[in-house]
Length: 201
Ligand code: URA
Ligand code: SF4
Image (cartoon, rainbow, N blue to C red; front, side, top):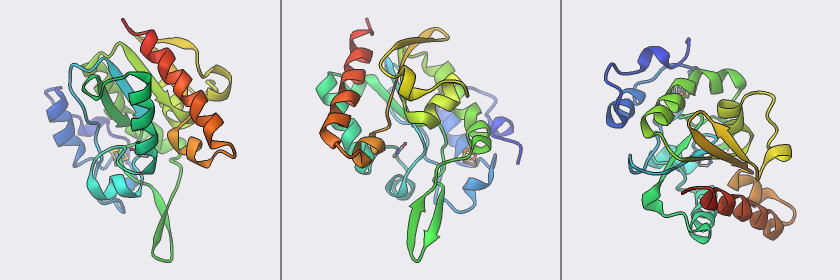
């Protein structure tokens, strides 16, 4: 396993990428997961929204953000005025990672090696989509896009430059769900999404 690069298609288009990613063996996560969960959304979307990796429900359904974290994200996008037709949703890592506890599959944070192995898919999505604004959800997406030194807790809610695009980092919607004060965490998340919305032409 030496990463996803050698699985990239010759012709770089979003549909070709998605087809090729379905057969990726760039790290070991493909072995136990159900399927690759590739990004979804219109190719003209101005917003690229990047999460961590698919969860249990995403793994079963094959689509990003269709579980509990997705419901928080949907609510945030709607309240921030970011149209779903204007948003492409994806993850830093495209396969679900878990440990078994009895029959339950417990989500496991991806390792740095897995984030790096999967990077070619995310970089190709970014290069093809050419979004105006990248919304970086949590530490894993930040590691993938903004580097090891970037701290979400320090730099969330700032407008950053990411190549030709702008970017705003915020907490992951799962962190909103786990926060001791969920309302406060959600309001912070929402204000970062609103900043991303306002900073887009
Ligand atoms: N959490 C993520 O980071 N991505 C998903 O697609 C679902 C949950
Ligand atoms: Fe390939 Fe990424 Fe899946 Fe690893 S997690 S097998 S690099 S698609």
